[in-house]
Image (cartoon, rainbow, N blue to C red; front, side, top):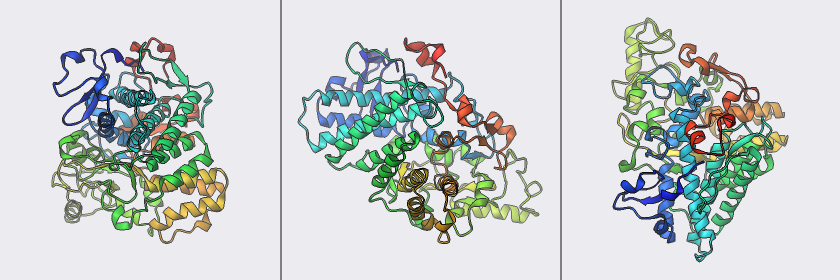
Length: 538
């Protein structure tokens, strides 16, 4: 990553803390900002830098080399599930993410999507580097507060590099990590302010594992996190579990996942169905608390996924689950209520060609029943009368204040995911009984009729674990990387997706033989970084 350190200052603004690396920064620096030296002069100021990163996890901001419209996990969680085929668009809508699901954005080095994903994560790395290197100089007394700051900085750096290497390089389990090109490892914050070539995937993982282990060590001796926006030791263990899972380091993944979920009990049925709109839910290990003054409005997570958000994307394009997947959910599993298979198809522009009236919707045979069903959905879930409905639409993600553009929290990590990681790792180690017991923790809580004895082989267990992940974590941003880890093709046949709408995203061969699963490096990076040329492009 080519970072212009010479004129890079840390901005401590009244509203939030962000990092700008613009060459013309000195002409635009606000009067309420201070220099990088001052920003890193005390633990209190370093915490402000971290607070900026907590906000950057979900917020929009004009980072160098990026634009506000696609910054933050608010965008990339639903984007990855659109590309990975989990969140299905029922119509062209207003165009948002259409090029994502058509596999046009991540395969284009000039797209805003790849540029923002890359530059924002290197922004996290640059800020973490500044904190880590300043503290490691040894000029500060070690205290629980300082350990908290340092632990979070190491965790953010591990998280950011993991997001980069699993997205811009061939998957660890489907490639040759020792020789596959990964991403540049940039750790310095002192002269000569140089960049770096692409390290191998293996080298990047070595750095990631070192960072996350350091994070856990420091957080073990740290003061308590202020809230769930901060990276706690449980969240760091969860990041470690994800890293190990993507690498196939099964024993480490199982152990870290078990530690991550300690103290975060699974949701009850009523809590699970409450909308996933607050990080106060018992399962949430890590999430972003979005306040009114810092909302993303029409670039927020709920704008992309919630059926109740009052935006043109939501009103015209209800997001649906694969009908094939939905029909596999047992009637005894109460998660089935998170999608509405018989919601009337009221949108004339619906991509399946069945929208607009009872005459085209095969689920209805008269106008009164058709519109009565629509009104029931709208009034039950708090949509506006401008919202369309569609068969298999999701009602998993619901606003606290439906029918508005009010902000809601963004969830990054839940204990349910950790149960699934632990079970998958145990299954891959062929520890059948342990995997059965672990999976039962989640599956029996969602479906009282679930019977672990039915899954008595590794193959059966893995198929059930995949099913549970697809249902439990629907819309939370995991499907793209799950395809890579499992080396599974993307096939939208029999899902309800429109081949006309999805185009190249309707079918993609499995990742081990298809390099389109590897995102293009931004052209802006190739143009700026002397160590990366066109020949290094994915």
